[in-house]
Length: 159
Image 1 (cartoon, helix red, strand yellow):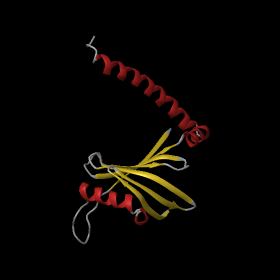
Image 2: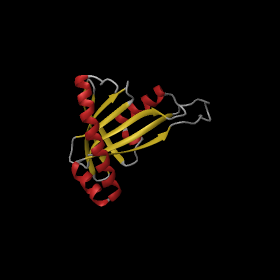
Image 3: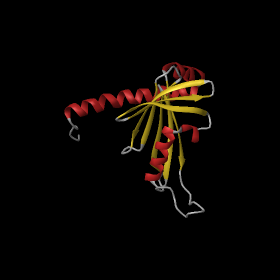
Image 4: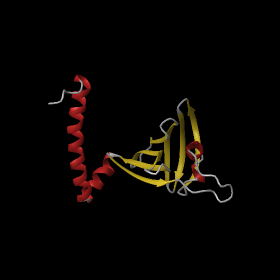
């Protein structure tokens, strides 16, 4: 599967109050966005929470002609809200994640993970993505083997 992400800085002093966004304030806004996406996502025209769970909720939304069913799981400690698509869509996962940049400013990262079909289509249409995929899949395979071995047997002594 292929994951693509975009990150933006959430900064700026409010002209009326002189306040700047805080992590706690951004987290509360992200929770509201998860429950009331029509306020935040122009493409979503309707949404409702169908069921609540101890760790999140199930919501149905309309995005253009598409009807979405998503399992929403907030993780405040990690600063992540995960939207797992349960319907027939190209995306298996959407994440909204709070972070900080190298200057300590708050950031929001939106990432999407494509299902296998759209991933294959994207890779077949772009030599650049195909090369990246091949390189990093090989790197991940090598890293995984060494990490697994080290996890099982400990860090090797220096030569």
